[in-house]
Image (cartoon, rainbow, N blue to C red; front, side):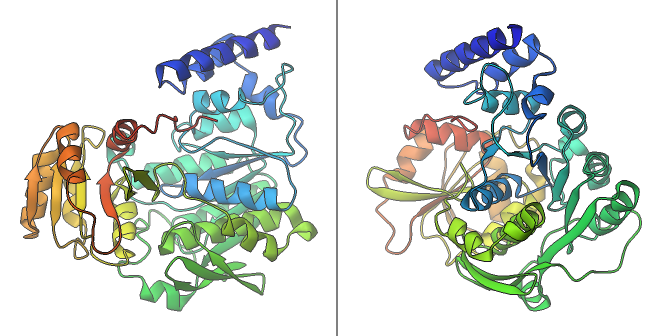
Length: 422
């Protein structure tokens, strides 16, 4: 009875949060305060268990891909929408369809998990499988160095006693996978890219330097063998399939290889590569990650400036130099000095720079002699200036933003849906 009351109170908090247009984690906080063991209870009867998706970059996109592939195979899936990768976010997502018993009805839970909160979540949710994407330089204000993230992921991976799927092109993850599988007995599988695809990447795969021991490269079961614009060809255990990607770039192809590899392991004989292609054919970009917003008759592409590897990969695979570009960064990026390591050769100019870090960004552009039209720290003024520009002759307007500015811009445009909402 108490669980049912907690679920109802959590839903009431969810309704109230939506009315005020924010606070998507508040309902989860309410639910976990009332029933601290709610997460474990919710997943304890799932036939296919729990899968964690982990890594510095690509978690939201890969989770979305894996969920779509599993559903295309007829599997019922619970997942936490993009961004809800903390305990309260996952609990909030569960409120959308969990019965009053507090136990999810789906066959499997596929969860994007934050590295720092992962160990505690693993103890609560007991994931039987884990998909490890990459170790990259990310959020040094939180993690200080990638070596700490390696240790976090290893702690989480030890819970995955059924299956461990690893990026074979990440020199930190390969030895981690070998160590963990030797202790847990988990099935160990790999995904990666072919030599030709890797060699063609303008700035490589952007994975971190090696920390600790190294292991020899392996031949993955799932390999990206070709990349052409917004499509890729992958081989899954010898079966080749061409896929439409949700957005351009090698990082999206690597993500789908990881998702397909995990789906193959989970489903066994039920797995069909044709379902992977079908799932990708109807998949859209994840909230704020390479999405295109329609506003006042114009299409505006959003590129998230999360960290150096993600920004570099997005810039590397631009189809052309942006004709109209706005860059806006605020205190959500405490130290943007890593921008000096970015190859901005795909950027010929910036029309407007905004956010509280606007002048720091302008200085970075000046360092590369990239012309800047206007520096307007106030985002409303910047958007007004940018949107007043005529439509580009080719392509769309483009914005490079950090997470917090992306959320503000979406609200300014009238997109009031919350990340992690459903």
